[in-house]
Image (tube, rainbow, N blue to C red):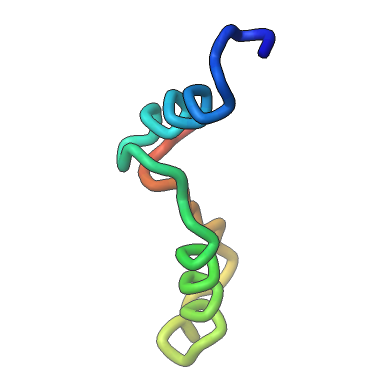
Amino acid sequence: EKTGRSAGEARASLASTNPQGRFIQPQEIAEAVLWLCGDAAQSVTGQAISISGGETW
């Protein structure tokens, strides 16, 4: 209310700043975690995995 926008408008505006134009979904986080827990990622060590849709800070 303080911004003069509805929650939906504020959410859409924030999502549009992401290079993918949307928010990351919980399923996408879960898929990355499952991959990291599997055999395919056995050589991955000491990494910070960014699941941001291309957003950088």
